[in-house]
Image 1: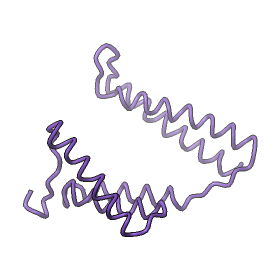
Image 2: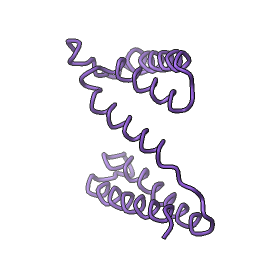
Image 3: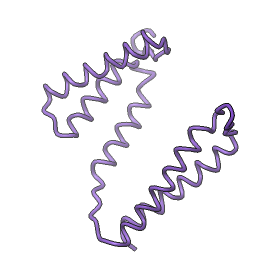
Image 4: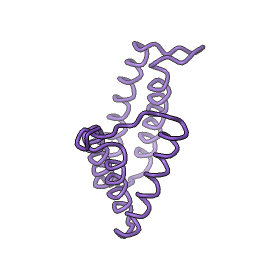
Length: 140
């Protein structure tokens, strides 16, 4: 079995599990319930995993694991430190690493991450008035 087929089967299992959990959370088609977004996300994941399985069965496509694993690790770390560092600091650091991972030089990564973080802060905190983590490290 090829690596693409194994990966697609793992994605399929995750999609089926999340689909099952979303039904327990009540999807609520007339008014969206807590399982609404997981239901549609897992449905898309299931469809894409079937497509990946068929594509990997048709031709041998090399699968590069380094970047996806690094991105997943960065996302996991971001989720862990978000409450500790606060939205702005954690997002700026996360974005610097993501931009650097995409091949941007450090000065450009810093400028882009500062711009994106402050823009998202303005949109969510000021315009939409969404409460964002202030960070317990900085007295929030």
